[in-house]
Length: 252
Image (cartoon, rainbow, N blue to C red; front, side, top):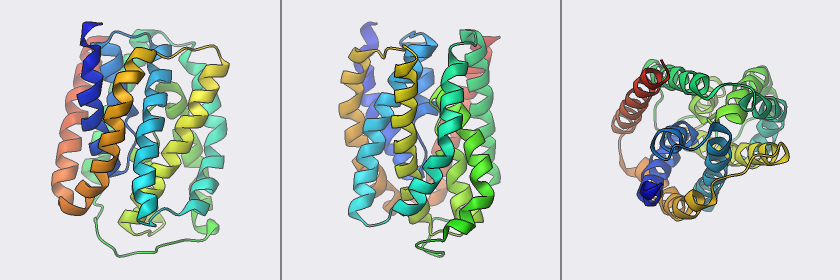
């Protein structure tokens, strides 16, 4: 566990990337916690959720200062995630660690492919706010996605941003900001469910990682404004592909 200090620079990097793209960091934190720090899956999930709570809180604050979060939509979407988060927390305790690595690796590669196939424009065209009826057709899908969040601490942001942008026609900055705020809520709820089931986080890792994600969460929104969309997507897709292949190889 001598490499635990790496959680600080890794936290800055992960939080900057995910808050710029509008996703959660679980899909990047879980491989670090399980493969580098060798934590057990239950401890990894809860540790990841607590770290993400700090990072998403920092990112949400940065976007809130820019008045870009649709809070009514955030609450509406968050309500749909509660059943899936609870079910996912239960599933973590019943799946073998090797199988968790395999599922996480496959999900990572699927997410990378999803980002390759979607053509999202980082511009200001679209709505600043939408009515609830525009979101209702996608609540079932969002609830299903939240199962992975509760089980693996993988956020719904990887899938939520394309839905908010392409299906609900929100402006890209509003979609990213609302996604970050929704992920914050799922992290808090997911951590609560795991805590109630008796899981314990690795507090030393949390202590190193939280300062990093607080810093990175403030850097991400600035990156989103200054870097072009192609560069952001290429960096993220490269990281996901590399991690996904390694997880699958390690699990087989």
